Length: 264
Ligand SMILES: [Fe+2]
Image 1 (tube, rainbow, N blue to C red):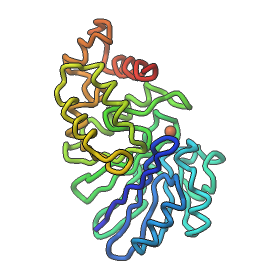
Image 2 (image 1 turned 30 degrees about the horizontal axis):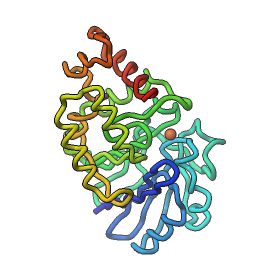
Image 3 (image 1 turned 90 degrees about the horizontal axis):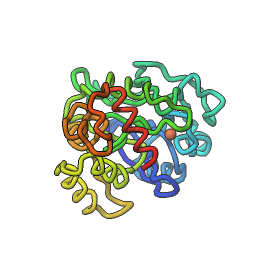
């Protein structure tokens, strides 16, 4: 069985790092190490041996712990081929559909997902028949998507989100690169003030112990609250914030929402 450990660094950007490991032999990989000391402590506590560091993309807050963690664990750093020179300690390149961890029929597969930057991969934990979870870096967040202001492209992001994520089953779990629940729910509510699912999810988020407990969403929940997954909902299309621009294409609406969120 493959297990997932979510590690949180509050400062400065509410980053999540992930350890994905085998209960059988203790081998592990780390996605986007931020606080190397925190990760090393977790590896020791759970008796894990780190084999690889997988970076979703080249931004400093996703590669921050690379060198210290690599030095301590002698693990191999993988990143997008075009991120070479920007990712500290990079050894190997990620490839579309490449498998970067395997255990008892489950595997961790890389999906190339340009948009937030042009060098972005997400990682998908799956069995032969089902996708269990998505580690989305800065492509998808709870109730939102990544910005495109530092090397990204909103049209590319739209096509990535549409082609890769719109059709995923409701039970697939989303593990994003940051905890942006609060801001994103506020934005969602500004687009759809009458969507009670947003109010309900906000009350769950507010019931969590701040900076300690986190609501983990699935794609079923995202489809109810994330405006970027709701481009054909009348309540989104008729939103006052969109100035009655009802005839926008899906892509135009996605880009318009992204622009509104940039200025939120
Ligand atoms: Fe980023």
